[in-house]
Amino acid sequence: MDTSQLAKFYKKDFQEKIQALLDAGVISKEDSQALLNESLNLEKGIGNHMIENYIGNYSLPFGLAMNFLIDDKEVVVPMAIEEPSVIAAASFAAKIISSGGGFSTAVTERTMIGQVTLKNVPNIDEAVKSVKIRTEAILQRANEAHPSIVKRGGGAKDIEIRVLDEETPTYLTIHVHVDTQEAMGANIVNTMMEGIAPYLEEVTGGTALLRILSNYTTECMATATCTIPVRKLATGDYSGEVVRDRIIEATQVARIDPYRAVTHNKGVMNGVDAVVIATGNDWRAVSAASHAYASRSGQYRSLTKWDKNDAGDLVGTLTLPMPVGAVGGSISIHPGAKLAHKILGQPTAKELERIIVSVGLAQNFAAVRALITDGIQKGHMGLHARSLAISAGATGEQVQQVADQLKKAPHMNLATAKEILEQL
Ligand code: NDP
Image (cartoon, rainbow, N blue to C red; front, side, top):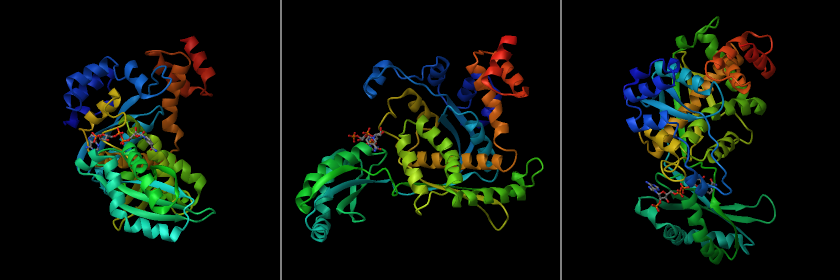
């Protein structure tokens, strides 16, 4: 990939952007034709088989975040999102972060958790013992329920027994840890849990109430860290030291105040969800897991940490559960998802985790930096003006003309946008 071809990407018009991507080796000739023909949409015949009561496609803007340097590798990041400013902010943050060496990432093994929860277990202590001594038999039955994942090198690896006795009645939950290889694994794990439930009923004397994966994927985690030289943080009237300290303080507030933490983490998820969606992954799963992880201390807190190192530079960290796949679900079906994986160089599931968590950290840096300096609206309003112009009915060049006048108007709203458009 020759990213020099992508310099000032945002200044190029649509055709120039596609040409630059082709010249840079990010997309193939065939992909460029698909983009020029706007053929990223699902075919009706496919959509009709994906969901029930299908009546058409609902599209989202698909864009690329630039300047990402992740584990010493340049990455162009596809994002599907309707919110203005997110891609610009990610690219801006990634540029500053790249100047300090980029993102370093770490991922755990990709182990998903399946749960079988049993009720009416006559003797919990006996049942626990009985399950424990049958660990191998349970794992064998789980693997027999989905043998193809075993052939691929994965499968059920371990069990954990949990007694849920906070309330009456007591439930017995058996966790099965499953290596789902390159898949997110929901269907694989669910099949296994349904497969072992009758045996667990037999072994415990209880009745299986629930048989499904846990979306709290604490055994599939990804971490990104970055170090930003303090001199790179200076902006306007703010010195680098002041920006650094205010970012650290703002993150402290998000650690202790759930009202702030939710907004802070929403900023993280702006980036995370956009890449998860673009790559055809299950964003509800990633979001649910991330917010649960933010509450792991018993209080909802900031997902990111910002601190300074001995040199006075700003150090950021983000750890998230990251149940994404490189195969499965809609990944090989949706044309947008297929292109996203191509743009990313067909990453493995672990590589995808590393990319997504880095984007989350970049997004958080950009949002907090804007908040503690100029405020977030300055950057947002330019793009918001364009959205208003489009809502007012502006097309083509009118969009920018209306937006430019709207930014100078005393009230930036739809009525003003319509007035400006009429005058034009
Ligand atoms: P799939 O059901 O599509 O299964 C992935 C399949 O890909 C595997 O079964 C395997 O089939 C095949 N495969 C090919 N290559 C590999 C490889 N290298 N590693 C692993 N598998 C490979 O997807 P998932 O099981 O990942 O389930 C994800 C989907 O489930 C998502 O669409 C999600 O929205 C949905 N879902 C989510 C739930 C939740 O989160 N609570 C609940 C239910 C569904 P084979 O080995 O047979 O060839």
